[in-house]
Length: 231
Image 1: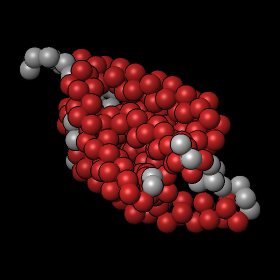
Image 2: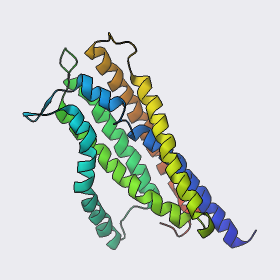
Image 3: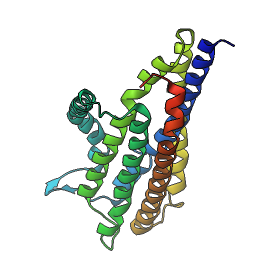
Image 4: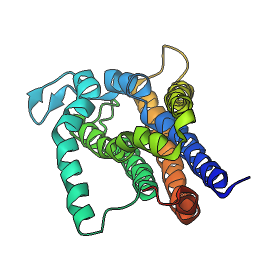
Protein backbone atom coordinates (compact mmCIF):
# COMPACT_ATOMS: atom_id res chain seq x y z
CA UNK A 1 0.00 0.00 0.00
CA UNK A 2 1.51 3.30 -1.06
CA UNK A 3 1.63 6.40 1.11
CA UNK A 4 -0.81 8.09 -1.24
CA UNK A 5 -3.33 5.25 -0.92
CA UNK A 6 -3.05 5.31 2.88
CA UNK A 7 -3.74 9.06 2.84
CA UNK A 8 -6.80 8.41 0.70
CA UNK A 9 -8.01 5.76 3.13
CA UNK A 10 -7.60 8.08 6.10
CA UNK A 11 -9.67 10.74 4.37
CA UNK A 12 -12.35 8.18 3.53
CA UNK A 13 -12.54 7.21 7.20
CA UNK A 14 -12.98 10.89 8.09
CA UNK A 15 -15.75 11.18 5.49
CA UNK A 16 -17.53 8.15 6.96
CA UNK A 17 -17.33 9.70 10.44
CA UNK A 18 -19.01 12.83 9.10
CA UNK A 19 -21.68 10.70 7.42
CA UNK A 20 -22.47 8.83 10.65
CA UNK A 21 -22.77 12.06 12.60
CA UNK A 22 -24.91 13.57 9.83
CA UNK A 23 -27.44 10.74 10.31
CA UNK A 24 -27.65 11.69 13.98
CA UNK A 25 -27.93 15.39 13.16
CA UNK A 26 -30.82 14.99 10.73
CA UNK A 27 -32.54 12.48 13.02
CA UNK A 28 -32.74 15.22 15.65
CA UNK A 29 -33.23 18.18 13.31
CA UNK A 30 -35.98 16.85 11.04
CA UNK A 31 -38.91 17.09 13.44
CA UNK A 32 -40.72 19.89 11.61
CA UNK A 33 -42.76 17.56 9.41
CA UNK A 34 -43.71 15.29 12.30
CA UNK A 35 -43.69 15.98 16.02
CA UNK A 36 -43.23 19.75 15.75
CA UNK A 37 -46.16 19.96 13.33
CA UNK A 38 -48.39 18.12 15.81
CA UNK A 39 -46.99 20.17 18.68
CA UNK A 40 -47.81 23.38 16.80
CA UNK A 41 -51.29 22.11 15.97
CA UNK A 42 -52.23 21.01 19.47
CA UNK A 43 -50.22 23.12 21.88
CA UNK A 44 -49.12 26.46 20.42
CA UNK A 45 -51.15 29.67 20.74
CA UNK A 46 -52.29 31.41 17.56
CA UNK A 47 -50.62 34.69 18.44
CA UNK A 48 -47.13 35.96 17.55
CA UNK A 49 -46.29 39.23 19.32
CA UNK A 50 -49.94 40.28 19.16
CA UNK A 51 -50.39 39.25 15.51
CA UNK A 52 -52.86 36.42 14.80
CA UNK A 53 -50.79 33.59 13.33
CA UNK A 54 -51.27 29.91 12.59
CA UNK A 55 -48.41 28.17 14.46
CA UNK A 56 -47.84 25.77 11.57
CA UNK A 57 -47.07 28.73 9.33
CA UNK A 58 -44.14 29.37 11.66
CA UNK A 59 -43.34 25.65 11.78
CA UNK A 60 -43.30 25.34 7.98
CA UNK A 61 -41.65 28.59 6.97
CA UNK A 62 -39.54 30.12 9.74
CA UNK A 63 -36.53 27.87 9.15
CA UNK A 64 -36.47 28.72 5.43
CA UNK A 65 -36.91 32.43 6.16
CA UNK A 66 -34.11 32.43 8.72
CA UNK A 67 -31.81 30.57 6.28
CA UNK A 68 -32.45 33.17 3.56
CA UNK A 69 -31.75 36.05 5.97
CA UNK A 70 -28.83 34.69 7.96
CA UNK A 71 -26.93 32.36 5.61
CA UNK A 72 -25.18 35.28 3.83
CA UNK A 73 -24.36 36.91 7.17
CA UNK A 74 -22.89 33.72 8.58
CA UNK A 75 -20.92 33.22 5.37
CA UNK A 76 -19.46 36.72 5.78
CA UNK A 77 -18.58 35.89 9.37
CA UNK A 78 -16.65 32.78 8.26
CA UNK A 79 -14.81 34.85 5.64
CA UNK A 80 -13.98 37.53 8.23
CA UNK A 81 -12.68 34.89 10.64
CA UNK A 82 -10.74 33.13 7.87
CA UNK A 83 -8.86 36.32 6.99
CA UNK A 84 -7.78 36.53 10.63
CA UNK A 85 -6.94 32.79 10.71
CA UNK A 86 -9.66 32.29 13.32
CA UNK A 87 -12.23 30.34 11.30
CA UNK A 88 -13.14 27.02 12.99
CA UNK A 89 -12.39 23.95 10.90
CA UNK A 90 -15.12 21.67 9.55
CA UNK A 91 -15.04 19.30 12.54
CA UNK A 92 -15.53 22.16 14.98
CA UNK A 93 -18.35 23.60 12.86
CA UNK A 94 -20.04 20.20 12.88
CA UNK A 95 -19.66 19.97 16.66
CA UNK A 96 -20.94 23.53 17.07
CA UNK A 97 -23.95 22.58 14.95
CA UNK A 98 -24.83 19.79 17.38
CA UNK A 99 -24.42 22.09 20.38
CA UNK A 100 -26.72 24.70 18.83
CA UNK A 101 -29.19 21.95 17.93
CA UNK A 102 -29.20 20.83 21.55
CA UNK A 103 -29.75 24.41 22.68
CA UNK A 104 -32.62 24.81 20.19
CA UNK A 105 -34.40 21.71 21.40
CA UNK A 106 -33.92 22.82 24.97
CA UNK A 107 -35.77 26.01 23.99
CA UNK A 108 -38.55 23.85 22.52
CA UNK A 109 -38.62 21.99 25.84
CA UNK A 110 -38.75 25.28 27.77
CA UNK A 111 -42.13 26.09 26.23
CA UNK A 112 -43.61 23.88 28.96
CA UNK A 113 -42.78 26.65 31.42
CA UNK A 114 -44.97 29.11 29.50
CA UNK A 115 -48.00 26.82 29.16
CA UNK A 116 -51.50 27.64 30.33
CA UNK A 117 -53.46 25.10 32.43
CA UNK A 118 -55.15 24.13 29.14
CA UNK A 119 -51.81 23.03 27.67
CA UNK A 120 -51.30 25.94 25.26
CA UNK A 121 -47.92 27.63 25.12
CA UNK A 122 -45.99 30.51 23.54
CA UNK A 123 -45.56 30.89 19.79
CA UNK A 124 -42.79 33.42 20.46
CA UNK A 125 -40.64 30.85 22.32
CA UNK A 126 -41.44 28.30 19.60
CA UNK A 127 -40.13 30.77 16.99
CA UNK A 128 -36.98 31.50 18.99
CA UNK A 129 -36.27 27.76 19.09
CA UNK A 130 -36.46 27.63 15.28
CA UNK A 131 -34.10 30.59 15.13
CA UNK A 132 -31.51 28.66 17.14
CA UNK A 133 -31.83 25.36 15.24
CA UNK A 134 -31.49 27.26 11.95
CA UNK A 135 -27.99 28.31 12.96
CA UNK A 136 -27.29 24.67 13.82
CA UNK A 137 -28.27 23.73 10.27
CA UNK A 138 -26.14 26.54 8.82
CA UNK A 139 -23.09 25.15 10.63
CA UNK A 140 -23.58 21.65 9.18
CA UNK A 141 -25.49 21.60 5.91
CA UNK A 142 -23.30 23.89 3.74
CA UNK A 143 -20.07 22.04 4.52
CA UNK A 144 -21.26 18.47 3.95
CA UNK A 145 -21.13 18.26 0.17
CA UNK A 146 -17.88 20.19 0.11
CA UNK A 147 -16.32 17.73 2.56
CA UNK A 148 -17.45 14.71 0.54
CA UNK A 149 -15.77 16.21 -2.53
CA UNK A 150 -12.56 17.15 -0.74
CA UNK A 151 -12.15 13.92 1.24
CA UNK A 152 -13.00 11.46 -1.53
CA UNK A 153 -10.65 10.30 -4.30
CA UNK A 154 -11.85 11.41 -7.72
CA UNK A 155 -12.97 7.90 -8.63
CA UNK A 156 -15.21 7.71 -5.52
CA UNK A 157 -16.72 11.19 -5.35
CA UNK A 158 -20.05 10.15 -6.87
CA UNK A 159 -20.36 7.23 -4.43
CA UNK A 160 -19.54 9.36 -1.39
CA UNK A 161 -21.94 12.11 -2.46
CA UNK A 162 -24.64 9.47 -2.78
CA UNK A 163 -23.82 8.16 0.70
CA UNK A 164 -24.10 11.70 2.08
CA UNK A 165 -27.59 12.09 0.63
CA UNK A 166 -28.51 8.57 1.75
CA UNK A 167 -27.44 9.54 5.28
CA UNK A 168 -29.92 12.40 5.14
CA UNK A 169 -32.65 9.93 4.16
CA UNK A 170 -31.74 7.59 7.01
CA UNK A 171 -31.72 10.56 9.37
CA UNK A 172 -35.23 11.57 8.34
CA UNK A 173 -36.42 7.99 8.81
CA UNK A 174 -35.00 7.93 12.34
CA UNK A 175 -36.54 11.38 12.92
CA UNK A 176 -39.93 9.85 12.20
CA UNK A 177 -39.31 7.08 14.71
CA UNK A 178 -38.24 9.58 17.34
CA UNK A 179 -41.29 11.74 16.67
CA UNK A 180 -43.57 8.73 16.91
CA UNK A 181 -42.04 7.91 20.27
CA UNK A 182 -43.08 11.33 21.59
CA UNK A 183 -46.72 10.98 20.58
CA UNK A 184 -49.36 10.23 23.18
CA UNK A 185 -51.34 7.16 22.06
CA UNK A 186 -55.10 7.53 21.78
CA UNK A 187 -57.28 10.38 20.59
CA UNK A 188 -58.66 11.26 24.01
CA UNK A 189 -55.38 12.62 25.45
CA UNK A 190 -55.64 16.14 26.79
CA UNK A 191 -53.62 19.02 25.37
CA UNK A 192 -51.58 19.13 28.57
CA UNK A 193 -50.72 15.43 28.27
CA UNK A 194 -49.60 16.02 24.69
CA UNK A 195 -47.59 19.07 25.74
CA UNK A 196 -45.73 17.15 28.42
CA UNK A 197 -45.05 14.21 26.08
CA UNK A 198 -43.64 16.41 23.33
CA UNK A 199 -41.59 18.69 25.57
CA UNK A 200 -40.12 15.73 27.45
CA UNK A 201 -39.15 14.31 24.06
CA UNK A 202 -37.50 17.58 23.04
CA UNK A 203 -35.54 17.63 26.30
CA UNK A 204 -34.26 14.13 25.50
CA UNK A 205 -33.28 15.21 21.96
CA UNK A 206 -31.48 18.22 23.43
CA UNK A 207 -29.44 15.97 25.72
CA UNK A 208 -28.58 13.54 22.91
CA UNK A 209 -27.56 16.39 20.59
CA UNK A 210 -25.32 17.93 23.25
CA UNK A 211 -23.70 14.53 23.90
CA UNK A 212 -23.11 14.03 20.15
CA UNK A 213 -21.63 17.51 19.87
CA UNK A 214 -19.32 16.95 22.82
CA UNK A 215 -18.25 13.58 21.40
CA UNK A 216 -17.43 15.15 18.04
CA UNK A 217 -15.42 17.93 19.68
CA UNK A 218 -13.48 15.34 21.68
CA UNK A 219 -12.83 13.39 18.47
CA UNK A 220 -11.86 16.56 16.59
CA UNK A 221 -8.04 16.16 16.87
CA UNK A 222 -8.27 12.54 15.65
CA UNK A 223 -10.58 13.45 12.76
CA UNK A 224 -8.38 16.40 11.81
CA UNK A 225 -5.37 14.08 11.55
CA UNK A 226 -7.36 11.79 9.28
CA UNK A 227 -8.31 14.75 7.09
CA UNK A 228 -4.72 15.78 6.51
CA UNK A 229 -4.56 19.18 4.82
CA UNK A 230 -8.31 19.25 4.12
CA UNK A 231 -10.09 21.93 6.15
